[in-house]
Image (cartoon, rainbow, N blue to C red; front, top):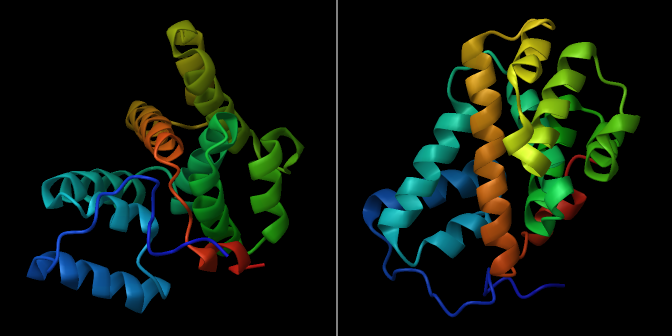
Length: 190
């Protein structure tokens, strides 16, 4: 079992006491998830940074979009797989299992999304997220057009790019700080 008292290898303790709004947010996490995700605890040494992180995350992953919540989580897992981000693979792999109701899909996306039974829309979306992660400087109009051809509009392409970009950033921070996923994620929705 990992040390859940230290969400990262850095000695950056959470603000104590947490501001009332932050504590309320953490209480909602416990109510809905059964835990406070370690990524939130890791950012809670600086409430402004925590608020910036959660604001961006909530907007990208939970707000209205032409992408379903499952599709956004699929992007998170594929990007995290390419980047080998242990934290995000565990946390977002659990989310894919939950949202899809298919534990195998979560595992396939973690290992190699190409073996997953995806429709043309999902495959094009994940191919784009992969290219953006590995070689974003090589993205051309034909890559965006391939998304349009399977039904994505320009706003959807913006959302795909932003979700992939956010997880490329957060993967690097999580890996650089040795962020540990909450133990609860490992057994969820299997």
